[in-house]
Image 1 (tube, rainbow, N blue to C red):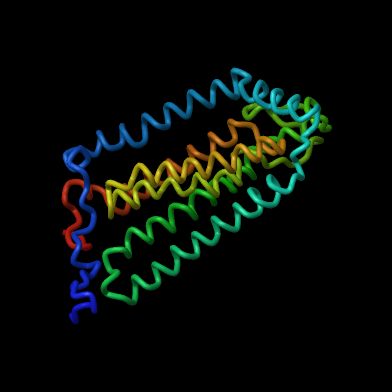
Image 2 (cartoon, rainbow, N blue to C red):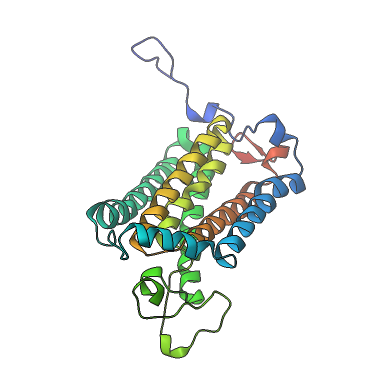
Length: 263
């Protein structure tokens, strides 16, 4: 390999051992990993969902926003909520997915990028599956958006998630939150970083959570979703990310992968 003009020899990606996990995770068993990364987060999200849906937390927050906007969803068609964050956010998430796809193509044709093939494939699949599962659930749960409810100036009565929906009310598709999933689907970046640069896993997770939160709050301000709808999207995104990681890489923390290949 020819040295660079600055006298520093380039280091190919393949020379860096991939999937080097932190000591605490490298020593963890599969059960410990599942407990810390799946069971405990899902338990916390389940408690939050119960408080919001059964404890009327959803209505309390929506009432607050509705009154703050003057007894209407004044921000429903606002430029910064409907165009910048809603439409622009969708485009940004799609662009990010396309960039991951292009990186994966390069990893398949460039030997120097070989260690990135599986992590990039994982990231692309995790984001696509999580948003797909959310879209599927939206079509099955038949829950209304706040702006459709009589309580907030709409025409429909509120029907809970587990209550039978009268046929006359027609179709509804607001749970989980689709737009928030365009942000929360990227929580898979935590595991992507865990595989390649473990020290970046928390900043990566924080970025994904902040994006999902921004998307979700903007939709709540528009009257498009309750907070529990966003919690549901986060639960789907995180569950998909964990299970797909276990399927594709476990037990990577026990040394299953070496130099980018199965041992």
